[in-house]
Amino acid sequence: MSPLIKSVLSTRAGFGLSVLRIFVGIIFAAHGSQKLFGLFGGYGLAGTAQWMESIGLAPGHLMALLAGGTEFFGGLALIIGLLARPAALGLSFTLLVAIFSVHISNGLFMANNGYEFALALLGGTVAVLLEGAGKLSLDAAITK
Image 1: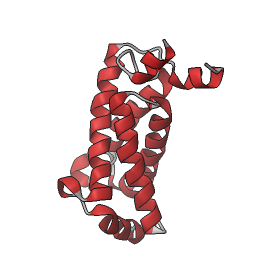
Image 2: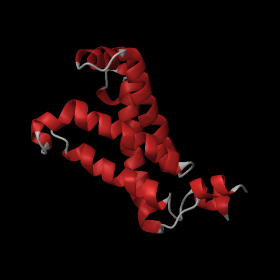
Image 3: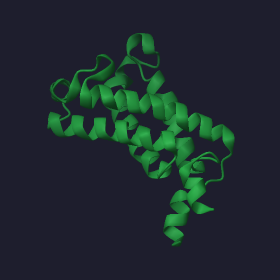
């Protein structure tokens, strides 16, 4: 196995980070399915694209596809623990965009559409990015 692949798939984390990764992955997969498919009360790709255009993220269709795809497929990657570090990197970037383009002006708390929830998810994705997927992951199984 090449050193690059081994460094991407390796993990220093134990079972605790595996639990965190799975729960964060479920949240992201659900949010991505709202954006892409209109599930769970979401607006689907067309509605999300229109909203993204309205807040200045243009072209809206591309931004909705990138955000929704990263959330959905990145969330699935976190759930199964396959390529968790690259998924966490993409999700971290998506969260930073959400925080600074939508939530920061509303303050911290969710009651005012603040960045509280996004910041908590960012903590989870950064933990996976730094530590790896944990013992209960396909990444760990592949590197053994």
